[in-house]
Length: 160
Picture (tube, one colour):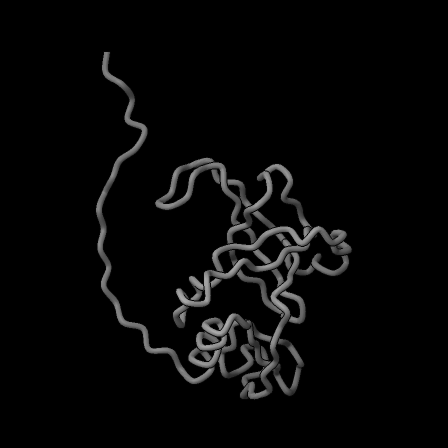
């Protein structure tokens, strides 16, 4: 009797070049400094993180820049039980709404049991060492619980 196939290792290579625009460049450089910046729309006042240079709703330029604390709220999440390169299951990926932002971003949540992650959980970023930082999203290793009380459902219900 043969064993069932449980994993197939398929090497894939994708070479690409990315040239960020002005807003993205400023954002990536802020991450290199250990900061998270966003931009506010002058018309509807939505804050975009990462900044896009223009509001997707109003179509106007977003030039006002804000520095966020980095803390945020888990708005939805997934516990994954399938191995992935560099990640040992089970691990949690979550959509996090950063305080002051009007958009969610996906990050890993660690330093807690996957079963303890919940909607409304308050989290903060864990950064790579300053000497290892480059201008990319990899500067945020993952998010971890802050220990603060959970956010009110009304604070994140529109982001689920």
